[in-house]
Length: 114
Length: 117
Image (cartoon, rainbow over all chains, first blue to last red; front, side, top):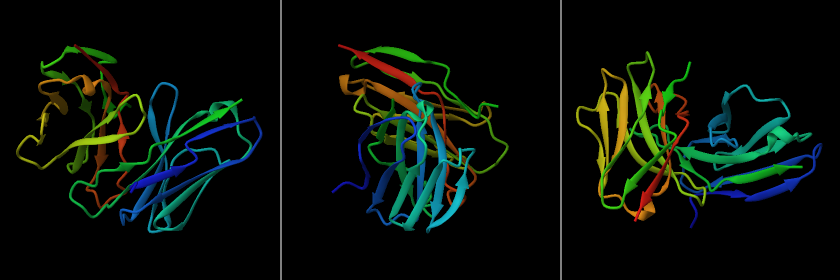
């Protein structure tokens, strides 16, 4: 049973389109994240939600809109896709009240914008 | 300023030998956590080991150990008895503040490790 699952795993789309990536975790964690991994493999945080409340919103274009309907789900919607949005998007979750607070990652969603 | 620095873009190691992957960090927060993750070619991110800033002993998890030198702000990962399956990209990451903070991790650039048979 996958702990953090993302769908879809692959998206190929044209510039200007809108797309969504869904994430669900069954670990009972209270915090969820979206990270972007670029072509150089650099991982950068985009957003974080704690119990459905947005707590981190890094410098991300407002074409990116996260939504957390409940603490087990965090979705990412991207409007007006641009070439530079091509990347792997990772969802992750953690329980911030543990001693370590390590992040558990989903398998990633590879977005290719043509 | 770069908060987590991994200066080795790529490393090679012979199977069954030990290898050290370097990581230095920069923070003024007295409470922080350091993590290492493995990313094989299949792409998933696998948590390996954690070191808290107040931990007195170096963390170990099986063949992984973390050489934590607080004064030098370094947190190197040591992999003993390398196996072919260890070939992957390795990321060092830091959380500033206790885990009850935002929980956000800042990642280094990564080091690609290749294990030779």
